Image (cartoon, rainbow, N blue to C red; front, side, top):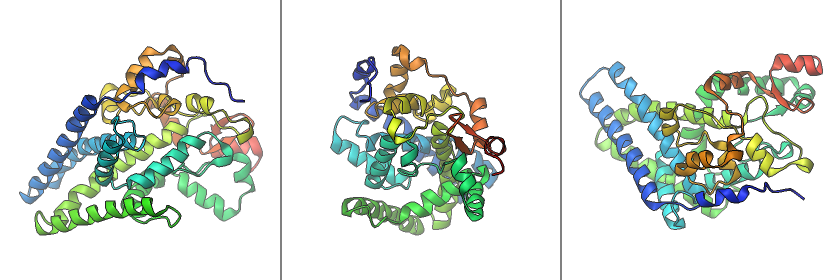
Length: 335
Protein backbone atom coordinates (compact mmCIF):
# COMPACT_ATOMS: atom_id res chain seq x y z
CA UNK A 1 0.00 0.00 0.00
CA UNK A 2 1.25 3.49 -0.90
CA UNK A 3 1.44 5.84 2.06
CA UNK A 4 -0.08 9.27 1.51
CA UNK A 5 1.72 12.25 3.06
CA UNK A 6 -0.04 13.29 6.25
CA UNK A 7 0.07 16.94 5.14
CA UNK A 8 -1.78 16.37 1.86
CA UNK A 9 -4.92 17.99 3.28
CA UNK A 10 -3.08 21.34 3.34
CA UNK A 11 -3.50 21.52 -0.45
CA UNK A 12 -7.29 21.62 -0.19
CA UNK A 13 -7.73 25.43 0.09
CA UNK A 14 -5.99 25.86 -3.28
CA UNK A 15 -8.09 23.39 -5.25
CA UNK A 16 -10.96 25.81 -5.88
CA UNK A 17 -10.75 27.82 -9.10
CA UNK A 18 -11.44 31.56 -9.19
CA UNK A 19 -13.41 32.88 -12.15
CA UNK A 20 -12.36 36.54 -11.58
CA UNK A 21 -8.66 35.58 -11.43
CA UNK A 22 -9.03 33.37 -14.49
CA UNK A 23 -10.68 36.16 -16.51
CA UNK A 24 -8.07 38.68 -15.37
CA UNK A 25 -5.27 36.32 -16.43
CA UNK A 26 -6.91 35.81 -19.80
CA UNK A 27 -7.13 39.58 -20.33
CA UNK A 28 -3.59 40.38 -19.25
CA UNK A 29 -2.23 37.62 -21.48
CA UNK A 30 -4.32 37.33 -24.64
CA UNK A 31 -4.91 41.08 -25.15
CA UNK A 32 -1.21 42.08 -25.13
CA UNK A 33 -0.35 39.02 -27.24
CA UNK A 34 -2.86 39.97 -29.94
CA UNK A 35 -1.67 43.58 -29.67
CA UNK A 36 1.98 42.65 -30.23
CA UNK A 37 1.09 40.39 -33.16
CA UNK A 38 -0.95 43.21 -34.74
CA UNK A 39 1.91 45.64 -34.17
CA UNK A 40 4.38 43.35 -35.95
CA UNK A 41 1.99 42.89 -38.86
CA UNK A 42 1.61 46.67 -39.17
CA UNK A 43 5.39 47.13 -39.04
CA UNK A 44 5.94 44.54 -41.77
CA UNK A 45 3.31 46.05 -44.03
CA UNK A 46 4.85 49.49 -43.41
CA UNK A 47 8.18 48.20 -44.76
CA UNK A 48 9.90 48.61 -41.40
CA UNK A 49 13.08 46.53 -41.19
CA UNK A 50 12.68 43.02 -39.82
CA UNK A 51 15.55 43.73 -37.40
CA UNK A 52 13.29 46.22 -35.59
CA UNK A 53 10.49 43.66 -35.49
CA UNK A 54 12.52 40.68 -34.29
CA UNK A 55 12.95 41.91 -30.67
CA UNK A 56 9.14 42.13 -30.35
CA UNK A 57 8.96 38.41 -31.11
CA UNK A 58 10.49 37.65 -27.70
CA UNK A 59 7.77 39.12 -25.44
CA UNK A 60 5.14 37.83 -27.89
CA UNK A 61 6.61 34.34 -27.58
CA UNK A 62 6.65 34.69 -23.80
CA UNK A 63 2.96 35.58 -23.84
CA UNK A 64 2.27 32.59 -26.08
CA UNK A 65 3.95 30.37 -23.47
CA UNK A 66 1.64 31.92 -20.86
CA UNK A 67 -1.33 31.21 -23.14
CA UNK A 68 -0.17 27.59 -23.29
CA UNK A 69 -0.20 27.45 -19.49
CA UNK A 70 -3.81 28.68 -19.53
CA UNK A 71 -4.59 25.99 -22.12
CA UNK A 72 -2.78 23.47 -19.93
CA UNK A 73 -4.87 24.40 -16.88
CA UNK A 74 -8.03 24.09 -18.95
CA UNK A 75 -7.11 20.52 -19.89
CA UNK A 76 -6.89 19.78 -16.16
CA UNK A 77 -10.28 21.51 -15.65
CA UNK A 78 -8.59 23.73 -13.08
CA UNK A 79 -8.57 27.17 -14.74
CA UNK A 80 -12.32 27.75 -14.29
CA UNK A 81 -14.66 25.98 -11.89
CA UNK A 82 -16.94 25.26 -14.86
CA UNK A 83 -15.96 22.27 -17.00
CA UNK A 84 -17.75 23.84 -19.97
CA UNK A 85 -15.80 27.08 -19.58
CA UNK A 86 -12.55 25.11 -19.44
CA UNK A 87 -13.46 23.29 -22.64
CA UNK A 88 -14.39 26.48 -24.53
CA UNK A 89 -11.34 28.48 -23.44
CA UNK A 90 -9.20 25.36 -23.82
CA UNK A 91 -10.20 24.93 -27.46
CA UNK A 92 -9.64 28.63 -28.20
CA UNK A 93 -6.22 28.82 -26.52
CA UNK A 94 -5.37 25.40 -27.95
CA UNK A 95 -5.86 26.80 -31.45
CA UNK A 96 -3.60 29.74 -30.55
CA UNK A 97 -0.83 27.32 -29.54
CA UNK A 98 -1.55 24.91 -32.41
CA UNK A 99 -2.52 22.05 -30.08
CA UNK A 100 -5.71 19.97 -30.08
CA UNK A 101 -7.54 20.21 -26.75
CA UNK A 102 -8.94 16.70 -26.24
CA UNK A 103 -5.89 14.91 -27.61
CA UNK A 104 -3.47 16.82 -25.40
CA UNK A 105 -5.80 16.49 -22.42
CA UNK A 106 -5.59 12.72 -22.74
CA UNK A 107 -1.85 12.41 -23.38
CA UNK A 108 -1.00 14.86 -20.61
CA UNK A 109 -3.16 12.94 -18.15
CA UNK A 110 -1.16 9.84 -19.04
CA UNK A 111 2.04 11.80 -18.36
CA UNK A 112 0.78 12.69 -14.87
CA UNK A 113 -0.28 9.13 -14.18
CA UNK A 114 3.10 7.64 -15.12
CA UNK A 115 5.70 10.31 -14.30
CA UNK A 116 8.79 8.79 -12.72
CA UNK A 117 7.80 5.21 -13.61
CA UNK A 118 10.64 3.59 -15.54
CA UNK A 119 8.40 0.81 -16.81
CA UNK A 120 5.91 3.27 -18.32
CA UNK A 121 8.23 5.74 -20.03
CA UNK A 122 7.49 7.18 -23.44
CA UNK A 123 3.82 7.91 -22.83
CA UNK A 124 2.10 11.27 -22.63
CA UNK A 125 4.72 13.09 -24.67
CA UNK A 126 7.63 12.22 -22.40
CA UNK A 127 11.17 13.12 -23.42
CA UNK A 128 12.83 9.92 -24.67
CA UNK A 129 15.03 8.72 -21.81
CA UNK A 130 17.09 5.51 -21.73
CA UNK A 131 18.89 3.90 -18.82
CA UNK A 132 22.64 3.28 -18.96
CA UNK A 133 22.02 -0.47 -19.26
CA UNK A 134 19.46 -0.08 -22.05
CA UNK A 135 21.72 2.24 -24.02
CA UNK A 136 24.68 -0.12 -23.72
CA UNK A 137 22.55 -3.01 -25.03
CA UNK A 138 21.12 -0.98 -27.96
CA UNK A 139 22.07 -1.32 -31.60
CA UNK A 140 24.49 1.10 -33.23
CA UNK A 141 21.69 2.86 -35.15
CA UNK A 142 19.57 3.26 -32.00
CA UNK A 143 22.52 4.81 -30.20
CA UNK A 144 23.11 7.23 -33.09
CA UNK A 145 19.44 8.27 -33.21
CA UNK A 146 19.30 8.65 -29.42
CA UNK A 147 22.37 10.91 -29.47
CA UNK A 148 20.81 13.01 -32.24
CA UNK A 149 17.51 13.22 -30.37
CA UNK A 150 19.16 14.27 -27.09
CA UNK A 151 21.41 16.82 -28.78
CA UNK A 152 20.31 20.27 -27.52
CA UNK A 153 20.39 21.80 -31.01
CA UNK A 154 18.02 19.14 -32.32
CA UNK A 155 15.79 18.90 -29.24
CA UNK A 156 15.30 22.61 -28.65
CA UNK A 157 15.66 24.18 -32.10
CA UNK A 158 14.22 21.61 -34.51
CA UNK A 159 11.77 19.49 -32.49
CA UNK A 160 9.55 22.36 -31.22
CA UNK A 161 8.64 23.73 -34.67
CA UNK A 162 8.17 20.26 -36.16
CA UNK A 163 6.04 19.18 -33.20
CA UNK A 164 3.70 22.17 -32.98
CA UNK A 165 3.46 23.10 -36.65
CA UNK A 166 3.53 19.66 -38.31
CA UNK A 167 3.20 16.57 -36.10
CA UNK A 168 0.29 17.89 -34.06
CA UNK A 169 -1.71 18.50 -37.22
CA UNK A 170 -2.18 14.77 -37.81
CA UNK A 171 -4.48 12.59 -35.68
CA UNK A 172 -3.49 9.28 -34.17
CA UNK A 173 -5.99 6.69 -35.42
CA UNK A 174 -6.14 5.25 -31.88
CA UNK A 175 -7.32 8.58 -30.45
CA UNK A 176 -11.03 7.96 -30.71
CA UNK A 177 -13.72 9.96 -32.50
CA UNK A 178 -13.99 12.76 -29.90
CA UNK A 179 -10.24 13.45 -29.81
CA UNK A 180 -9.92 13.32 -33.59
CA UNK A 181 -12.89 15.68 -33.90
CA UNK A 182 -11.25 18.10 -31.46
CA UNK A 183 -8.01 18.09 -33.46
CA UNK A 184 -9.85 18.50 -36.75
CA UNK A 185 -11.68 21.51 -35.31
CA UNK A 186 -8.35 23.02 -34.27
CA UNK A 187 -6.92 22.37 -37.74
CA UNK A 188 -10.01 23.88 -39.38
CA UNK A 189 -9.67 27.10 -37.37
CA UNK A 190 -5.96 27.31 -38.19
CA UNK A 191 -6.79 26.81 -41.87
CA UNK A 192 -9.44 29.53 -41.58
CA UNK A 193 -6.88 31.94 -40.13
CA UNK A 194 -4.51 31.17 -43.01
CA UNK A 195 -7.24 31.79 -45.59
CA UNK A 196 -8.35 35.00 -43.88
CA UNK A 197 -4.75 36.18 -43.78
CA UNK A 198 -4.39 35.46 -47.50
CA UNK A 199 -7.24 37.86 -48.31
CA UNK A 200 -6.37 40.55 -45.76
CA UNK A 201 -2.86 41.15 -44.44
CA UNK A 202 -1.23 38.66 -46.81
CA UNK A 203 -0.29 35.05 -46.06
CA UNK A 204 3.41 35.84 -46.24
CA UNK A 205 3.04 38.57 -43.63
CA UNK A 206 1.12 36.31 -41.28
CA UNK A 207 3.68 33.51 -41.58
CA UNK A 208 6.58 35.94 -41.16
CA UNK A 209 5.15 36.87 -37.77
CA UNK A 210 3.52 33.66 -36.53
CA UNK A 211 6.25 31.16 -37.42
CA UNK A 212 9.15 32.84 -35.56
CA UNK A 213 6.95 33.59 -32.53
CA UNK A 214 5.76 29.98 -32.50
CA UNK A 215 9.30 28.67 -32.92
CA UNK A 216 10.64 30.73 -30.01
CA UNK A 217 7.68 29.88 -27.79
CA UNK A 218 8.01 26.20 -28.73
CA UNK A 219 11.66 26.20 -27.73
CA UNK A 220 10.77 27.82 -24.40
CA UNK A 221 8.00 25.30 -23.83
CA UNK A 222 10.08 22.22 -24.66
CA UNK A 223 12.86 23.50 -22.40
CA UNK A 224 10.40 23.93 -19.51
CA UNK A 225 8.97 20.44 -20.04
CA UNK A 226 12.50 19.03 -20.30
CA UNK A 227 13.93 20.65 -17.18
CA UNK A 228 10.86 19.72 -15.13
CA UNK A 229 11.76 16.04 -15.33
CA UNK A 230 15.35 15.89 -16.55
CA UNK A 231 17.83 16.83 -13.84
CA UNK A 232 20.58 15.04 -11.93
CA UNK A 233 18.71 13.73 -8.87
CA UNK A 234 15.35 13.22 -10.52
CA UNK A 235 13.17 10.41 -9.18
CA UNK A 236 12.74 7.28 -11.31
CA UNK A 237 11.55 3.89 -10.08
CA UNK A 238 10.36 0.61 -11.50
CA UNK A 239 6.60 0.10 -11.25
CA UNK A 240 6.83 -2.30 -8.31
CA UNK A 241 8.34 0.32 -6.01
CA UNK A 242 6.92 3.44 -7.66
CA UNK A 243 5.34 6.01 -5.34
CA UNK A 244 3.22 8.77 -6.97
CA UNK A 245 3.86 11.24 -4.15
CA UNK A 246 7.62 10.73 -4.25
CA UNK A 247 7.42 11.01 -8.05
CA UNK A 248 5.65 14.35 -7.69
CA UNK A 249 8.02 15.87 -5.14
CA UNK A 250 11.28 14.30 -6.31
CA UNK A 251 10.52 13.58 -9.96
CA UNK A 252 9.23 17.06 -10.80
CA UNK A 253 11.47 20.06 -10.28
CA UNK A 254 10.89 23.29 -8.42
CA UNK A 255 12.34 25.56 -11.11
CA UNK A 256 13.17 28.79 -9.29
CA UNK A 257 12.75 31.62 -11.78
CA UNK A 258 12.96 35.41 -11.52
CA UNK A 259 9.59 37.11 -11.06
CA UNK A 260 9.26 38.24 -14.70
CA UNK A 261 9.96 34.73 -16.05
CA UNK A 262 7.67 33.24 -13.43
CA UNK A 263 4.90 35.49 -14.75
CA UNK A 264 5.46 34.59 -18.40
CA UNK A 265 5.58 30.87 -17.55
CA UNK A 266 2.43 30.98 -15.44
CA UNK A 267 4.14 29.70 -12.26
CA UNK A 268 4.76 26.32 -13.92
CA UNK A 269 8.18 26.30 -12.22
CA UNK A 270 6.32 25.10 -9.11
CA UNK A 271 6.01 21.84 -10.95
CA UNK A 272 6.35 19.64 -7.89
CA UNK A 273 3.16 21.20 -6.55
CA UNK A 274 1.40 20.80 -9.88
CA UNK A 275 2.18 17.08 -9.85
CA UNK A 276 1.04 16.72 -6.25
CA UNK A 277 -2.37 17.87 -7.42
CA UNK A 278 -2.99 19.16 -10.98
CA UNK A 279 -6.36 20.58 -9.85
CA UNK A 280 -4.50 23.57 -8.38
CA UNK A 281 -4.73 26.41 -10.94
CA UNK A 282 -1.51 28.15 -11.93
CA UNK A 283 -2.52 31.39 -10.22
CA UNK A 284 -2.53 29.66 -6.80
CA UNK A 285 0.73 27.69 -7.11
CA UNK A 286 2.98 30.40 -5.63
CA UNK A 287 0.65 31.04 -2.70
CA UNK A 288 0.37 27.30 -2.10
CA UNK A 289 4.17 27.00 -2.04
CA UNK A 290 4.54 29.87 0.41
CA UNK A 291 1.89 28.46 2.76
CA UNK A 292 3.02 24.83 3.12
CA UNK A 293 6.33 24.07 4.83
CA UNK A 294 6.67 20.60 3.31
CA UNK A 295 6.63 22.01 -0.23
CA UNK A 296 9.42 24.46 0.58
CA UNK A 297 11.71 21.61 1.60
CA UNK A 298 12.17 20.62 -2.05
CA UNK A 299 15.56 21.82 -3.25
CA UNK A 300 15.09 24.49 -5.93
CA UNK A 301 16.58 24.15 -9.39
CA UNK A 302 18.10 27.48 -10.36
CA UNK A 303 18.65 28.65 -13.93
CA UNK A 304 22.43 28.17 -13.66
CA UNK A 305 22.03 24.66 -12.24
CA UNK A 306 19.39 23.74 -14.79
CA UNK A 307 21.86 24.27 -17.65
CA UNK A 308 23.68 21.15 -16.48
CA UNK A 309 20.60 19.20 -17.56
CA UNK A 310 21.52 19.87 -21.18
CA UNK A 311 24.29 17.30 -20.86
CA UNK A 312 22.51 14.67 -18.77
CA UNK A 313 21.28 12.02 -21.19
CA UNK A 314 20.97 8.66 -19.44
CA UNK A 315 19.49 7.42 -16.18
CA UNK A 316 21.70 5.19 -14.03
CA UNK A 317 19.56 2.86 -11.94
CA UNK A 318 22.44 2.02 -9.61
CA UNK A 319 23.32 5.54 -8.51
CA UNK A 320 19.73 6.76 -9.10
CA UNK A 321 20.70 9.85 -11.05
CA UNK A 322 20.90 11.23 -14.56
CA UNK A 323 24.38 11.04 -16.05
CA UNK A 324 26.28 12.20 -19.12
CA UNK A 325 27.45 9.83 -21.84
CA UNK A 326 30.99 10.23 -20.48
CA UNK A 327 29.89 9.32 -16.94
CA UNK A 328 27.95 6.36 -18.35
CA UNK A 329 31.14 5.01 -19.95
CA UNK A 330 32.79 5.00 -16.53
CA UNK A 331 29.78 3.35 -14.88
CA UNK A 332 29.06 0.60 -17.40
CA UNK A 333 32.13 0.32 -19.60
CA UNK A 334 32.14 1.49 -23.22
CA UNK A 335 28.73 2.74 -24.40
